[in-house]
Length: 257
Image 1 (cartoon, helix red, strand yellow):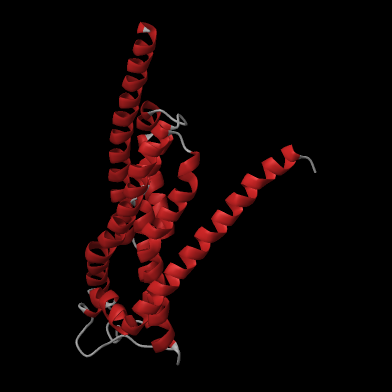
Image 2: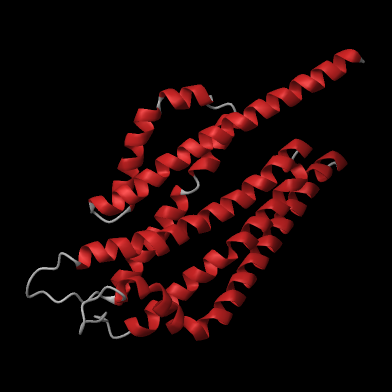
């Protein structure tokens, strides 16, 4: 093997070693957060189940249909919470790995976009917990059948909550996706605006897929998705215009010289 081949392979090996180290750092950090949270697993589940417990009829409670559910369900929730807490650290590791290969203007844009992605994901989860779930459970508990006791299994409840968190967390990323599509030149703001009616229909279709099969949940997801799309369209136009103005100024400066 000649010297040129060795020079080409060496950076690849270094990148793979760095990638491995960052993955290991992420795993260690996730494990550490999980270990710290595990003693409070029952309290965490109590906090998550509060929206349902607040509207359960008097004399009823949640149930566990599996013998090991009282142990594994809070543990599962604690693990997912640890993953959510680690999201900023995970994004930092991704950023630290890819940033050396980016141009300066790409780094200037990627940092705010990454921070916005994290904040919007947590905002979606908070919106689901503080607004959607209480309204959903109040509505469903108000139409119980006569002679049927409302007692939800703790595992099924957790699955529902995690599904809602993920759905609203991802839905709140729509402005980021819209901005990236516009800035990358894949689609223009004018083209997106012309397809607004189809995007609104798509929001309701996504709401039907990602949420429980009731009109209330679907609407509570679809309407914010539409509003977030409009926000992304606005900021996409703004950033594109700013980029065009900067390029024009640079061209005029270059022509002067």
